[in-house]
Image (cartoon, rainbow over all chains, first blue to last red; front, side, top):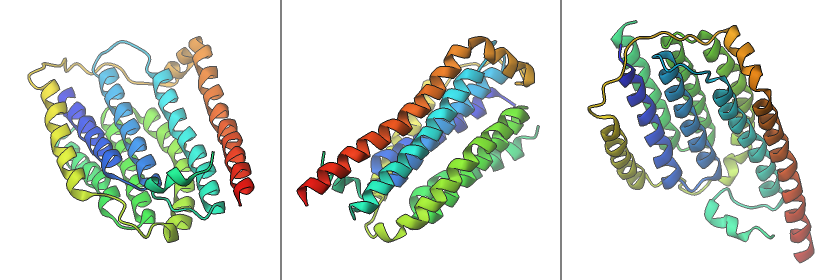
Length: 99
Length: 160
């Protein structure tokens, strides 16, 4: 089976994630969109690796997974703030956050 | 490897990814996201990378558990319509055309050779500085989040 199929799949997933990021107003859904986009990047990298690109993708994959884990930390922190401030998860309301 | 298995996994993964935006509850969206993760690990398995598939599942399972908790708790705060579906559909079609056109006509080598193994992880430690940067990034995000939110909270407390 061709590498092209895996690349098309990863590009479709990337397109879905990016479209969701643009079209969503919900804070958590936007974070999910970024997760989906990062996931598509790992799939594309692995496809390139499997089909003969001679390199070590371990560091790249672990970096992407670290970004995904960082997002979880940020989500918990921001959600805690939103809850204490009794604010909505609508990103249009995030302008109300006091600096 | 059979083509129909790949097509099934690809269709299911795309459907699960779209379901994140079609489902109304955040909890359901989280479940759809976890389905995307699982199906992506199946795609890794089809690329003969069982180690990467397992590592990815182990890593994301913690994130999914946290998202489930936050998604459940955030249910009462999501009374608004959170995805503009026409904008989503238009952007998806446009991006699909642009991205797929970029690889249209390109001939890729089809000689599968590499499988990421324990030796690959051992080789990764030759660039240990990058791993330290990753760990530093994780700690920076957590400490930065705490500092930022403390400041937000302090300012909000002052204005009340």
